[in-house]
Length: 149
Image 1 (spheres, rainbow, N blue to C red):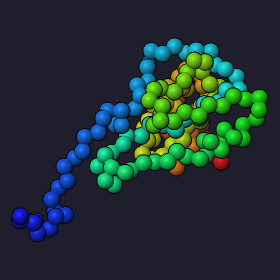
Image 2 (spheres, one colour; image 1 turned 180 degrees about the horizontal axis):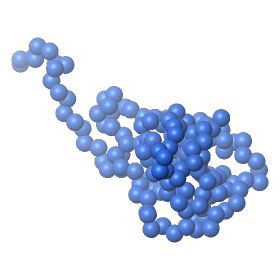
Image 3 (spheres, rainbow, N blue to C red; image 1 turned 90 degrees about the horizontal axis):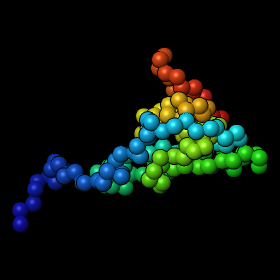
Image 4 (tube, rainbow, N blue to C red; image 1 turned 90 degrees about the vertical axis):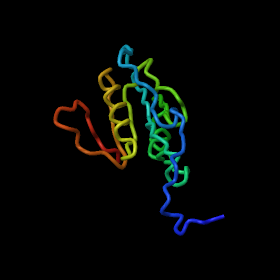
């Protein structure tokens, strides 16, 4: 058997990944605007694409503890739901609409976070973005950005 002089110069073939690992759940643009439920907060950890080739297939982002910390400190009269799109393979709930939606934002899934924020905002929910990648919105954006403490 003949060994290559430098095995690190050979490209590694890309591994196949199922669509469920690379594409987020579809947000229905035609979904109706249901009534808003007062004192209902929905905390979302957005979907991020998994790369079977990164770090030998072991790349994973742990969910932020900020969302669960907010859920734990919510007053008893409020209703809080935590939704992790990476674990629950369907769109976040919207019937009834939450009064406020909190979304963790990381550079890896910032585009998905902004899509979710706009989707809920256009249906009447207040949206709060926080995390490592909160930055000013473009001038034509209708999003309200507010970092969490």
